[in-house]
Amino acid sequence: MERFTVKAIQNMLSDKQINAAELFDLYSSRITDYDQSFNAFITSDVEPNVEYITDDKNQESLSDAALTGIPYAAKDIFCTQGIRTTCGSKMLENFIPPYDATVIKNLKQQGAVLLGKTNMDEFAMGSSNETSYFGSVHNPWDRERTPGGSSGGSAAAVAAGLAPIALGTDTGGSIRQPAAFTGITGLKPTYGRCSRYGMVAFASSLDQAGILALSAEDTAIFLESMAGFDPLDSTSVEESVPQYSQYLEENIKGKIIGLPKEFFDGSLASPYEALVAESIDSYKKLGIVFKEISLPNIGYSVPTYYVVAPAECSSNLARYDGVRFGYHSKNIEDLDEFYRTNRQIGFGEEVKRRIITGTYVLSAGYYDAYYLKAQKVRQLINQDFERAFESVDIILGPTTQTSAFKLGEKVDDPVSMYMNDIYTISSNLAGLPAISHPIGFVQGLPYGLQLIAPHFKEHDLLNLTHQYQKVTDWHQMMPKLSMSSESNN
Amino acid sequence: MAITKSDIEHLCGLSKLNLDDDEIPIYLQQMTDILEMIEQLQSADTDEIIPMAHPLDMHQRLREDKVIDTNDRDIYQKNSLSAEEGFYKVPKVIE
Image (spheres, rainbow over the protein chains, first blue to last red):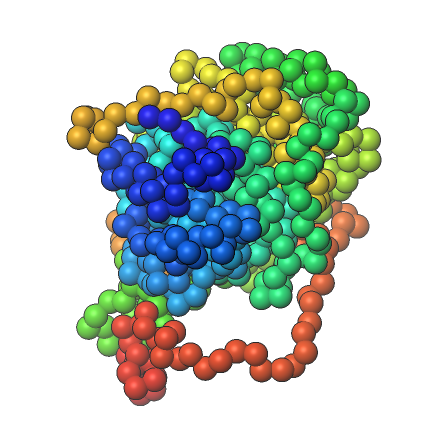
C-alpha cells in the first residue's frame, strides 16, 4: 500500500488519473480494512461533506479552489455540522454539532473532503491517547505502543496512510509529540493564527488548531486555507495569511538557529542525542549557522503549564452540566446531585484530575500562590524567548525525550506522563509556532526534531523543514500494515 | 501545603463532581504528587513581573452592538435530553 501526499494527490486529480469520488472511496476503504488495528477513528462512516464530489459538473466549477477533492481527517474536537463530535468523551458521546468549526468551514470552502473524526485523549488531556472513552489508539509502527497524544488518532491515521493529512490541536504538544512518535510532520501555528471557533475548548490561552501531514509541503498547502482572522473568535489575530507554499524554496543559507543549552544538558539518551546531532549536521550542510543560547526559565515550563492548563480547563469544562447537552443521568431529584452525577459518569479520570487541580489552584487562599505565580513565571519564559530571538531566527531542540513508549506504561503515574511534554510546552506558553519533523529511528521507532519560530513566522519553519526533507527521506518511510482480519487483536 | 481528604471533598463541591469513597485516596495521592511538582514554581524570582494572561499580550477586541445571531433555539436544543417546549427541564431548585 502506498501513502500519497496532498501534493501528489493534487497532481493525480489534475492529470485525471483519479477523480474526487474515487479518491474518497479509496481512503474510506483503507479505513474499513485497516483501522481496526489502530483505532485511529471514532467516526468514519461519513458521507462526503462537499456536494460536488458526486457531481462531475460541480467538480469542474470548484476546480479553482485550492483543495478540491483532497480528503482529510479531523480530530474529534472540531465541531462538524451534522457529524457526531465526541472529544473522545462519554460526556459528548452523542453530541451532534449544529454548526461547523471555522477551520472546517474554511477547508470545505476550498473543496477539501472530510473522511472522518479521529480518536483523541479525552478533551485533549493526555500525551498517549489512552484516556479516550473510545479506547486507546495503537502506533502503526508498533501496535503495543502509543502514537502519542492527544492527537493520537490523527497521527496514526496519517502515518498508516488512512488519510493523506489530518487536523489536530496542540495545547502542550499534542500535535508535535504524536507526529514525532509516528514519524510524520506536525505543526502548531502561532496562537491566534487559526480560529478556535467551534474547536472545543480545553485551555483557552494555550489551545491552537494545527496540522499533521506527510511533509512540510503538504502542511503549507493546508495551512494557507485553514488560517486567517475570524471575527467569531475573540483571540483570532488580524494578521494576513502568507502563501506558505511560496516560501518553501527560499534560500536558508546563513539563517541562525539557536540551541538552548537547557535542551542539550546531557539528559537525552545517546541514541536520541546522536539523531539530533546528525540532523544538526544536515542543517549545517544546508548552510545554517548554529549558536548556543540560554532559556534560563524553561525548566519551569511543566509546572507552569500544569497550573495554567488545569485552571483554564476547570473553567471551560464547567459548561458540561448534562442539561443543554452531554451525558444526562435519569431519576435524580436534586439539582446539585444531578450535576455532580452527570459529571462523575460523563468524565474520565484524567479530566476529573485536571478539573480538581484547576479548581484547587484557582480557589480562595491558593489563587495567588499558584495561578498568579504561574502567570508571572509564564511571563519570564516568554521574555526568555523574546531575548533569544533578538540574536537567532529559529530555536531547535528535541520534540520528545524518547520514542514512543508502551501502552499502559505511564497510565498510573500522572506526573511521569506530564514530563513527556517537557520540550513542547514552552512554545504553547509563549504562543510561538513550532514544528516537529522526523529525523530517524531508534530500534525501529521514529524520532522527531522540533523547530520553534517567533510569532507568525510559520513560513520559516516550513521553509527549513522542506529543505531538510529534500535531502533526507525519513518522512517518506512508512510502517508495514496488515489488514484488520489478519492482525492479532 | 499538604492536601487532605476534606480538601478533595471541598473541591468536588466547588467543581460539581462526585467521586466514590474508594476513589478519593487515589486522587489524594495523585494530587499530592502533582502539587509537589507544581511547588517548583515557588523558587522562581517573579518580583516586579507582570502576570501574562495572553500569549500575544492582546486586549479584548470589541464589536458594534448589533444583533447578528438568529434565533435557532430548536436546532440548539436537539442535543438536550432535558428540553421541553423550548425550556430546559431540571430537578426542582426551589423548595
